[in-house]
Amino acid sequence: MIAAVRGKRIVLGVTGSIAAYKMIDFARKLTQAGAQVQVVLTESATRFVQPLAFQAVTGVPPASDMFALEDDRVAGHVAMGRAADAVLVAPATAQTLAKLAHGFADDLVATTVLAARGPVLVAPAMETRMWLSAATQENVARLAQRGIVVIPPESGELASGEIGEGRLASPDALAAALDRALGGPGPLAGRRVVVTAGPTAEPLDPVRVLTNRSSGKMGYAVAEAARDAGAEVTLVSGPVALAVPAGVACVRIETALQLRDAVLAALPGADAVVMAAAVADYRPAETAEGKIKKERGGGELALRLVENPDVLRAVVAARKPGTLVVGFKAETGDAVGAAERMLRDKGLDLVVANDVTSAGSEFGSDTDEVAFVSAAGSERQPLLPKREVARLLVGRISVALSGRGTL
Ligand SMILES: Cc1cc2nc3c(=O)[nH]c(=O)nc-3n(C[C@H](O)[C@H](O)[C@H](O)COP(=O)(O)O)c2cc1C
Figure 1 (cartoon, protein in one colour):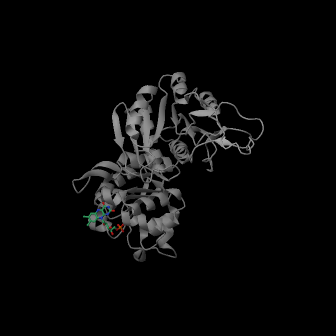
Figure 2 (cartoon, protein in one colour):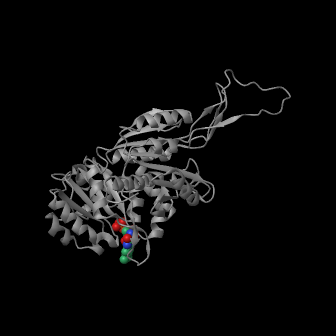
Figure 3 (cartoon, rainbow, N blue to C red):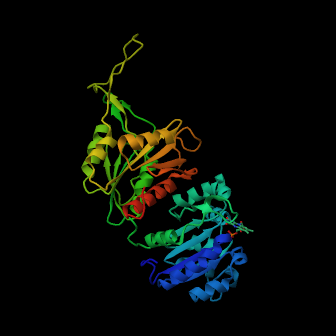
């Protein structure tokens, strides 16, 4: 278990999922690692696990009924949240996620989260269809936007016997997220990550550009997730309407040539390069010095375009051995097939494929349905908030850089 929990007060909120039993061992490990663990159970959770089991492993009686708290001088329902260094709700049911997303305060887990001063983490666990339901996904996205750390569920065999996504994250993943939230170094500590984001804009004249619909949300989410994992992040960003995440160094560019130069300048010392920018394949052959005037009665204006250099190829050619290079392939149609070709042709380590015509994955949306395509094969993901796609991607990069697996 992790070092950062030593001496920390951690509230472990356990809700009514079949996975609740797993938290007995997790609470024991947290306690053994030196944390002061206060377990808070929803009423439903007590149908799955005995409070006594938690008391036995933490040495502290769990709380459940906010109206029955002893030592409730004024504000027992919020005292635990205020005192906690971190609140982890695991497993978090669909019901509790909905409650938290809407600020309900009708049980002790909810009031504790509302009153928390420190970081709050939630680890959803439920059947795949419940997890993928629009309501749950909206609730999770809302919580993530509010700064709550969502520890994504894993794919695997569920309590029902079905195989799918929704299984509570592993104890290792819970521990790593808690560690990070408490200021631990994170899996990418000491690593440098370069991320490109947004569109490029190729000038036609002083007032007009050729550009595309990329919002930059994906690249910004990757930069944020890499920062959260402890990396030193350089974000090379085209023109977008997004705030640069705190602690991330940003180099602003407009054209594909500027983007290439900025990435190559940041490349020495980089451990991973994630190319999420939508780079123009062509640029105007020349940029007019003055504004191009409308010709009266002309009816047509022909533009001559020249090809931009392939930035991904340039990065792969210039990287030092061991630097991971990740590309993104936004396609209309067979995105996975196009990503497989791109992976081979350009010598990339991973391509994140995204069919921009599928519902929820359009340019500018907050969600994406992607597939991770590598030499090991392709792994399709369900429709997820971009922040979660980014976390998954950064998780893969962390594992690959640590030598524990491949991209
Ligand atoms: C056997 C059983 C297993 C359940 N497992 C889950 C689960 O894994 N995830 C979930 O979101 N809900 C699950 N539920 C439904 C929740 O227990 C129910 O929505 C409850 O109201 C949650 O309340 P709470 O969030 O206050 O604990 C399960 C229900 C039963 C009967």
